[in-house]
Length: 259
Image (tube, rainbow, N blue to C red; front, top):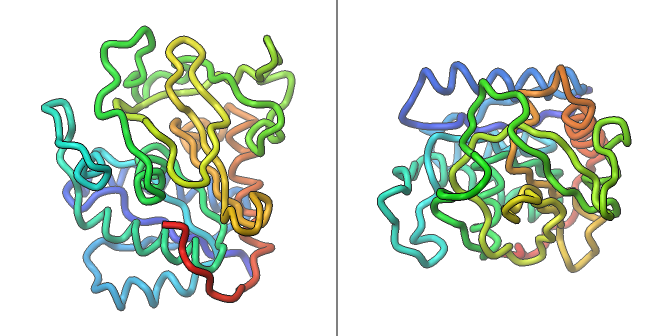
């Protein structure tokens, strides 16, 4: 059977955004061998948990919202977009489930930001002005490069043709559609990629520290590999590895969360 991947709807406030963006994540999951499962944002917690329990992995997608800054000890600044409590509540249930049961977790854009805050980290509320336009958007196929650590999980998925080595790092071209980023990494998360021009964090990884990073697949990226699935071997490799981990997942004893 194909592994089932829980993917929450990106937002509770913009149906058009959901209709445009959620199918891209679902398509990437399907093409890499999985079954996407939409997690609505208007169910009761019990209903949500029952649906999550039918899934073997979790994918946290992007969103037009920003994580509530109070969750990482900051007051919102004017540039910070409104929070989406319904999305955050569902994400937190998904994060708890993935960490308790060691389910593979792949977090994208907003998803990596809420992963980071849930693990005790902080965010930069607005990246402007910086030398790189991180808000380039979905119409820009390649916005900038990321310097990726070769020894990282992400680095192991890259090819020399797409991400040649330069000064000890693999240079991966990527899209970009965000105005916030990780500030201080959360507990157990390792920085594995940065934008070389301004040091903005582009990827983190690290599962349950108590059993080593290899025991639990947790990978978060700040760009949108679902948008570049057709043109980027790295994007396909990310989903392929995630789905391979999902297919191999077996239930484990419940552990105390790292959060």
